[in-house]
Image (cartoon, rainbow, N blue to C red; front, side, top):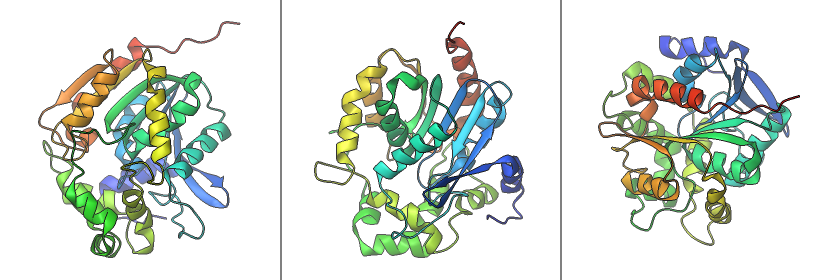
Length: 307
C-alpha cells in the first residue's frame, strides 16, 4: 500500500478508493474501473503507473468506462521477485487479456497506450482485432526499433550492465531521471516527481523498473522479439480503425523516428505533434490532448448491435 502526505498523490489515491484487485495466479493486479459506457482501456509503460492517466480518467469517466491496470511490479499491484513472476512481454499481454476477460470487456474497446503500453496493448489487439474500436497512441511503439533510430545509450547501460542495474534498483535512477527529463514544456514539480516514484521506494519494489528495460527486444533471438515482429505484421488489421496520435517531439527515446513509422503505417491517423513536449506527453500537454481525445471519441462512436 502506498502511503503519502503528497497532495497530488493523495488526490489520486482517493480516486483509487474504488480501485479493485484482480487475482492473477496468486498475485494482486490492481486496476481502476471508473464510469460506465464504452470501455476506454489505458495501458501505462515504464517507469510510470496508472497515475499517469489520472487526468484523462477524470475527464472521461462521466461518459465512458475507464479501465486502468497497474502492471505487476508497478503502481499499486504486487511486486514479486523473479521466482513468482516472469517479467516478460508475454506475461504482460497475458495479464491484460486475463483482466479484460475477467471484466467481460470483449468488444468496442478504445485502447490508450503509452511507452511499453503500446507494445503490450497492440500485442493484445493483434490477438483480438475484432475487439478494438479506436486507438489513442502516445509516444510509444508496436514494432521493432526503426532502422534509422540508434538505441539510446542510457537505456543500453541500464539494459546491459551491472552498473545500470545497481543504479536502477539501488537508487531509483530510472524513475527519478525519467520524471526530471520526461517533461519539457511543463517540468514536473517535486510533488509530482515524488508521486511518480512513490511505488518504487525500495530495492525490492524497483524490480519491474529494471526488468522492463532488460526485456527490451532489439533483434531476433531476444526474448519477446517474436511477439514484437508478429504484432508489427498484424498492424495492417487496424488500418481502418480510428486512430489519434498525440506525440511529444522532444522525447529522446520515442522521437520523430517512431512517429514517422506510425504515420507511414497509418496514413489515415489523426496526428498531433507537440514540438515543445517530451516523453510524458500527457503531463506536458494534457490541457491540449485531453480535449482532443474527447472530440476524437465523440467523432467515432462505437456502433452497437441492434436487437
